[in-house]
Length: 538
Image (tube, rainbow, N blue to C red; front, side):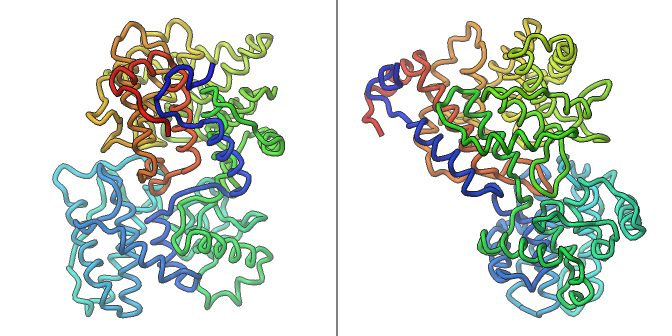
């Protein structure tokens, strides 16, 4: 039965054709699709004024400054980008005397002073390397103000956020200078190391020229062009320069917070589509490459990053849905007594990572029952863990995404599919939370309605057991209409890295999956017709 048979006259998204275009596009952009970052662009402005696209990077920062002088989103998400952009523009003002930058710098300084001196202290989101980034940028800004009083800028005092100091940063820099091993994941934020980034004897860029999959880290490793005579003897120096130049040209000057994200992007796209039953053909070479990435320690999101449990589990889950038998034993390296960590030694806890590990184990056991003895205990442990971390309102939150709808779709789908009867109540509570938080325009979202979060909400409603709640079909129909009417809407960056970022192809896959399941649901299409009547097909 086709979608048009279910709902004559209702507009339909051609999900088959759109999915085919999306998957084919992944092969054309092997580094991935990531939004430009204010934080990362600011670091490259400060560290690499010699790099092609410098004027465009400065313009990017100026264009994204808010009327209140800050950058970024609310709830603590603005501190890191505001520190980076303000320091970059202040550095440029100090060294060039460009008077046009004085106003934006003054606004940025006042915004920082206000945020950091707020009564009750500032609550920062759990983003990567924030404990190093904030002290390093505060120190740089204070140095600029102290050494350039002639600029006439406000004499602000930037108070360190509660619980944060410069001691850990000092230890990291000392370890790099001494040649001691540091966790590979810290190379993603190498720019915080200052001079130590250019003199760490054990640091070797990847064969494609990435340093921690970060343009800012690459710029920090390269150093100032005046030093290149000393550094260019390194065999990979030209590779790093060319890679950084290629990234800047691809984005027209601004840079993303992380690139490449090849295997993260491909696995999330394929798993969103396959889980929802969207028809598509995965290129054989893409499937083969994903298989080859899974080593004893799992898979990394992209070249220059360490392997992690999140990417590993989603790669394994996507391959399972595509019919590839690959045992998930590499995930055992991330297991502790209580949970699965994103990487060994992780200090925080991620609900979405543990949900994705549950997906990987559950899908494998479902397709290979003879492996149940090895994994069913872990499946049960993960299901209990997710249930225990559910909020009282039925939602979940997570350290890798700003929106509770991402965490909730990850946990609710995993528990519905592999959590057993004991998880049914938790899934129903998630459905009720989604129904209770829908906006007037039919969308869902933390700060405002977005296509991404609406897609997650629709998947929770339509890919789980909604029980007897009579609101389900009407709510999904309104959400589906929002997706149809909001095509082309700008999506906010909501995924956690040093700064928030938007993985465009991943989000489009989630939206396609939501449209597909809505169009195949007779109750949703029936509610759509009753509410909106016949609509000319688009």
